[in-house]
Each structure stands twice: as structure tokens, then as C-alpha cells.
Image (cartoon, rainbow, N blue to C red; front, side, top):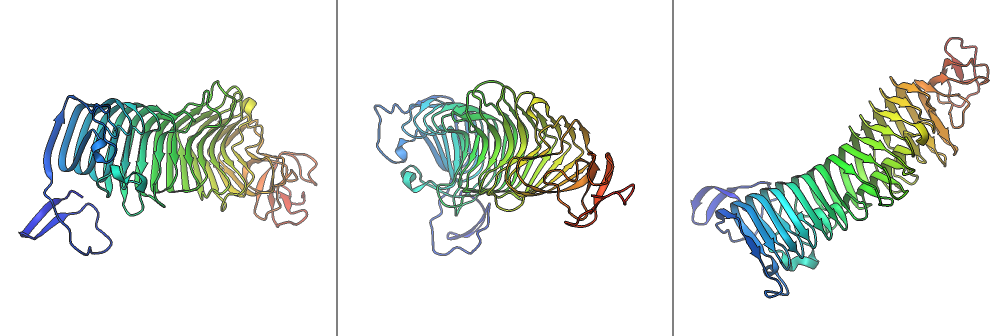
Length: 485
């Protein structure tokens, strides 16, 4: 990388300040070069004129290429008619770029290769034949001819993007032996053929630290907003996203493939609101890989005109240990909305926690959790209004589920609905259910509010507890323990 020299002992011995310390001492020898510093480029239209100046291969196909430099600034620069990249940066420490654009470039408008530290872009716009702006630690072998450098990318940001692109509006491409960390994208708008944001390693794993995407309103023609393929991310935050599903069938706004691995996903201020268009399902967060913890907060899910919405969906093969929904508003005036949808074939038993959410059913029913797989559910301090399908709805199968509830405001709501043969243990005075209803288990320590008559000798509208697992007459009425089922 490009590093600051901190001391010089003699002509062959000096010290530099590293951004990231290697895990082992280096071996062998290398050549150190003095970087160019304080480079500025302001104004102008830089036209490659690719028809006349065409070259078939290599880095000469890029329009503006800056490398091996520190403290670089660009402002109000237009790079047109490039064969490959309009702007190509790599091996840079300290970059400020304001208002970069292209009337058309055949590949990326801005390509950033590692090593790169402290590079910040504000204002990127244009019509693009590939991706608009990307960070890539190491180029894939198939395109190595266009890269001249590789390495870590740390503390870089992009703000204010607007483009029309043939692939992805923004791209993040990690690798196996380099590291990318502290990456921020903000105020991203545009339309791509493939997706709004594509995160994918051209190798096997693709290491990423902290990635943040804010105020994101970009998508591909197939309806994919943010797509994570081969990657290993420590923390991914998506703050502010409008999901527009009109005219797009079965879209996934935020999608994780079976090759993706994310430690923590923070998704907040997401609006997923269907109005008109193709009758189909919009999935806000679809996990097909590993996302250990999903925090979904301060968001809105609303469905109209027969277009159902799923909030967080775990598909077969997915691994998620915990889903936390906080301050999520759900409305079903015309179609079904499921804040959480868990399919069979997932790995493990996820814990699903609702806190401070508002769920209004109406015509759509709005089950809080639809599941055909084992899971543990907790609902606290929520408002449940006309959740008619059952807050917990089991459409098929025989999943083992625990349902806990406390401190909720409940009106005209059915707690449990089942078409399958589930085994459900209930723990909550909020939960109004008949102990002999389909799927309700005799689990020692479980408790609920019996809302039915004719359940053994239990009296309707009384609190009941279960004092033994699987035993007859284990359900006892608190006010009179001689009443049992």
C-alpha cells in the first residue's frame, strides 16, 4: 500500500506506519517507491474517443487512471467514451473526489482497487455499461488484464450516486487474502439491469468487516435491491430503503445467497409497501445462506391489492440463530403480510423476538410468524389488532414451537392458527387459546388464558397452567385447581 514514512535510519532501512499489521513477519525483498503526493485534477471533459483510439487489452483501455499516490483530489471531472473504466484508482492513500461523471462509459464509471485507504467520493452520475462505482480488493483472474494492483481497502465512502447502468448501481467485491473494512454508501439512487447493490467475491470467501448502506433507493430490473452472493461479512447495516414492487414479480429487496455468511444484519427504516402491479410476493429480507443475527427495526410492511409481503424469510438451507423485530409496523388492508416466514429445511432452531411492534390485520390477516420449521417465539409490548389468521400460523408440517408473550395490547386477535400438526408450547397470560386446540402441547410450566368452554372441567375465561408434561388433567385452573383438562 501507500504508507507514511515515520523514520529513516539509512538509505536501505526505514519504518512506515501500516494500516493493518500482518499476521506474520514478511520474508524476501521488495522495492519501495516514493509516492506522488498532493495531486489535483479539476474540471474538464476527458474524452477517450474509443472509436479512434481503440486498444484491445490492458490498463490502457481506462480513461483516467491514478495510482501510487497520496492526498489526491478531483472535482467536476467528466470522462466520456471510455473503452473500459472512466475512472480507475488503486494504490492510493487519501482521496477526495467530488462530482465525477460520464455521459457514457462501456464498463465501470469508477473502479477502485486495493490497496486503498481513506478514499471518499461525493457525487457520481452517468450512463454506464457495467457497474457505476465499485470497490474491489483483488480482480478476478478472468479480468486480471485490467488491474495493476491489489490489497486491502479500508475507510472508504461514496455519497450521492445517480446512474442508469447495464449491471449494478454499486458493487462491493472482496477477496480471500485481502480485507475490506469501514465501507459506507449513502444516498444511492439508480436503476441497474441486475441489482441496486451487488456484494460478491470472485474467489471462495471474500472477507468484509463493517459495511454500511444508507438512504438506498436503487434496484435492478428483476426487483433485487441488495444482493449478497459469495461473501463473509462481520456487520452489514442497511439504514433507509424504499422497496418498490410495482410491476416486478416475486422480488427480493435484500437477498442473501447460499454462499453468503453474515454475522450481524441491521436493517432499519425500511419501507416495503405494495400498491398496484403484478400480483406477486415481495420479500423484504430473504436469507438462503448464513445470517447469524437479523435486527429488523423501525420499518413498515403494508400490502394492498392482493400483493402479499414477507418481511424476514428463511428459506430451506438457511441458518439464522436470532431474528429481532423492534418498532416494526405491519398493515394488511388488502393482502397477507408476514413479518417472519420460516420454511422447512432450515438449519437449527431460530429465536424470533418481537418488541414494540404494531400489527394490524384486517382483510389480510397478518400472521406474525408463518412457520413450517421449529422455532422459539417471544412477543412483548406489541399491539396486535385483528390478527385473524393467528399470530403464529402453521400452514403445514409438524414443527415444534414455543410461544412466549407478555405486556401486549391485544384486540380481536387469534393467537394460533394451524393447518398442519404442530407441537406448540405456550407461555403467556396474554395468549388466549383453548388448551385443547390443535397443536397445543401439555408442557410442564406452560401457561395461558383459556378462552373456550367445554375444555375438560376448566371454566372459560380463566388463567390456566400446565403442571406436568404429557399427562392427562395436567392443565389446571389457577382460581380452582380441581378444575382440570
